[in-house]
Amino acid sequence: MTDLPKEYKTPLQEMTYRFLSENNIPFSRVENDEAVTMEDCIEIDKALDMKTVKTLFLCNRQKTNFYLFVTAGDKPFVTKDFSHALGISRVSFASAEMLDEIIGTKVGATTIFGVLRKEAEDVRVVFDKAVCDDEWYGCSDGTTTGYMKLRTDDILNKLLPYSKHTYEVIEV
Image 1 (tube, rainbow, N blue to C red):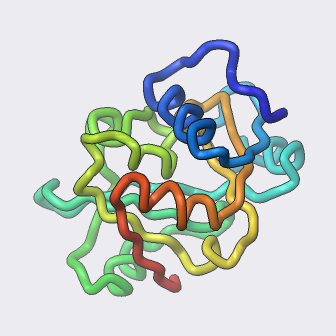
Image 2 (cartoon, rainbow, N blue to C red):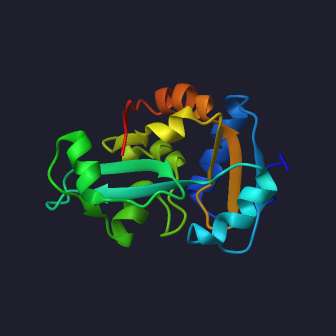
C-alpha cells in the first residue's frame, strides 16, 4: 500500500508523509496492530518483503549528547561496542520522556524521521554499515501501528540532507 494514512495519529507521522510526498520519494506501507518489539515486526517484514531496522535513541550520562543509532533489527545492541566505535564514553537509552520530547515518538516507534523535528537538530545520527549496505530500509512512520519500506539511498541522500543532519557509519 502506498497511500497516505486516512488520518495522522501524531505530528511526526504527518511530517513524515508530508516529507515523502513533497520530495516524490516512493514508499510502501502497512498498517498493523501495535508493534513495539522486533519480534512484533516479523509479520510486517513479510508483508513489505524487507527487514525492519532497529532505531535506538541513546544519550550520555549527563543527558547532553544524544544519538539516533540505526542497526539491523536482528542484531543485539552492545553499548560498549557502540561507544568504542565512536570513541565516546558509554551511552545508555534515553528516557521515554526525552524520546517523546526530542524525537516525537513513544517507545517502540523510534524512527529516523524524528530528524525532521526542530527539537532533534543536535542529535547525532549513526548507522550500522549493515543497514547502509541494504537496498531497502524498513521503519516505523513515527507510530507503533504504521511501518514503511523505502530505498536506503533516499534516507541517506534525501532525508538527512533535508534535515541538515550528517551521519556516521560504524561497524559493530
